[in-house]
Length: 75
Image 1 (cartoon, rainbow, N blue to C red):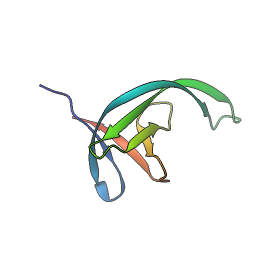
Image 2: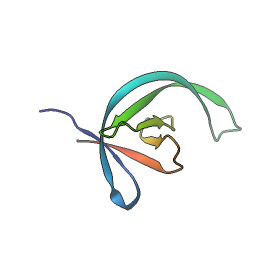
Image 3: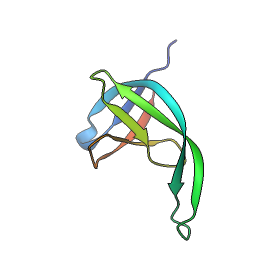
Image 4: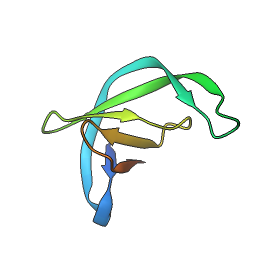
């Protein structure tokens, strides 16, 4: 059984995605503006649009040139 990944956005729109890369990235936390380094994932959809992880847990992503946050779903 194959694992499928989707990003879910506004209006419950879902886009199939796959891993592109994992990079070390600094993220500013809400706790006193502290900065931590994480292994951030980059995903790509069927149209070639790249989404970058924007949270510590690895469940929220943002496509380039977009302010909308998408949620990762695994099936």
